Image (cartoon, rainbow, N blue to C red):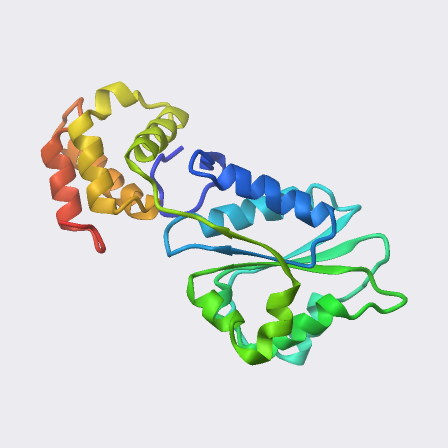
Length: 241
């Protein structure tokens, strides 16, 4: 298991910076029938990982929920896709739409979403939605035309960057799950540098650590040295110098 892969791996989910509490709240609110919830975060803070974890949890309860995941809002939301999204409605199951990168959703689709969430047909089940998006999503929902949609929202959750103690716990957890010994790979200076360079963003921290570990292996080093971290930060986009 790679500890710092770019691809979200739910086996490496870490909820120590509030994501576990957000997950629990999202799931409970869906069970309670909440029409609309939002999760707001800057890129790289774990929205997609959280979204997929929620998707899998809902899929494990197929008799109650029909979970639909839309990862690419830029795609053409034509009539055929809309029909596919809401096929075979059922009173016994709720349709739950999980929309990632929702700040890029077309306004027309969001107006259609409002109709889905507020229209109850005799033969149709309930529709619920969770929007995962960057801060621009708030600006989109502030638009006058979408105020009725914003008014449906029962909860908004924000994911924050890691503080120093959280980045240490995060790195330790990832290394431990991957079968590595954090005590031989991390020291306070390394953790401080990764935290500062990443700005507390786990995606950037992952990239720095992956490059640094590769550099250490190329040097046949049994320990991760500070110069490996410095080399990794110098070639990592968005790293803070």
